[in-house]
Image 1: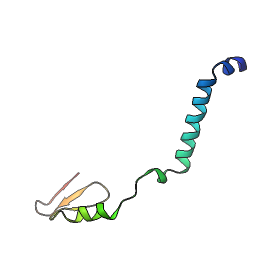
Image 2: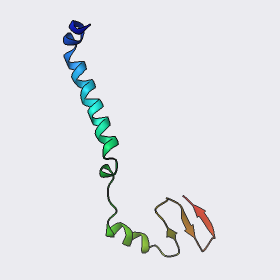
Image 3: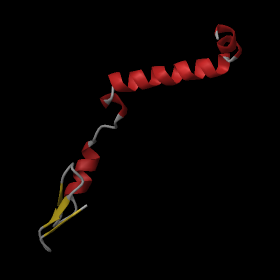
Length: 68
């Protein structure tokens, strides 16, 4: 079995790199997400009559509806 794995060095290296990337993603999950900037918050406030949140749901007080 060891000889077979040595013959498949490219596949073995790829598998090791994928597993290492998975471990790093699990160890540092929040560092991969983009941070919210002040411009995004300002643009959200400029829309009159619509009050949104970080959950993705938006409340429109004019029509009294909640939409995504």
